[in-house]
Image 1 (cartoon, rainbow, N blue to C red):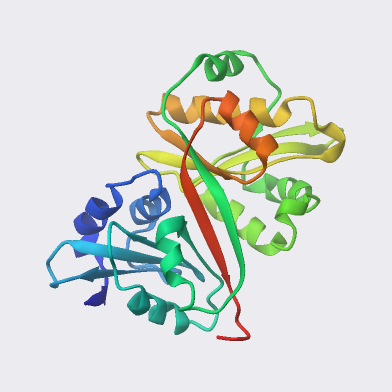
Image 2 (cartoon, rainbow, N blue to C red):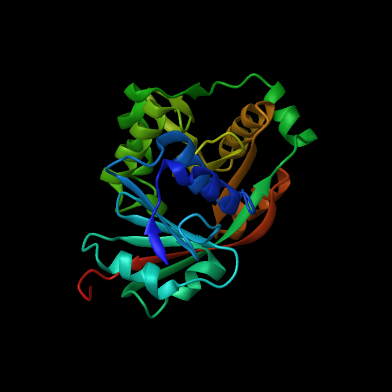
Length: 270
């Protein structure tokens, strides 16, 4: 059976998600930070009985969906929930889990990325963190300046409104932090975290203005973010599909632990 999950199900959700906390940092973070009674967020679970352990969980955050299962699960039943939402935009998650939704929802584009993790402080991180750098920590007043940079980066093209909303939400709720560098009053490099929870955080939005690349700004900024989070006892995760970025992250000590798939839903066929 598949049913809506509520606060009484918190322990069951965390037990399932906790089997792979890095892959499930979005589920863990959203439950910790927002609970179960939000208009923009819902969770469903598959179980054999109302009080039994969960076999699978599906998170809706706005119009994006994130499934997780540890073994076989009712992908058709969860896909039906997604098909009911005419505004559904994306399904993302562990590649093996998301694979089960192909053919069950109309997809216009698929993107696969590598998923990497950093659990412990290392010499590269500690040495970078020890050097005083002219990075600033963003507040909500810096959202427009930061996003003016990311608007110019091809990787972030087409998501200008969502990027502002997501960054503002993260900064206001304390579920993320952003470091940035300025030159002549303009933001020239940025790196952020999102989905911060008691165990981990996701690094996102790493970008450098084309005129300032090759100076190590992004690498040093990510190192500073990592140092901050590791000092708080949290691990760091990130996605990448750019081999050049992969080299930078490997130098910082990140290890690739899996693949992450994003299925962009074709609304015209829905």
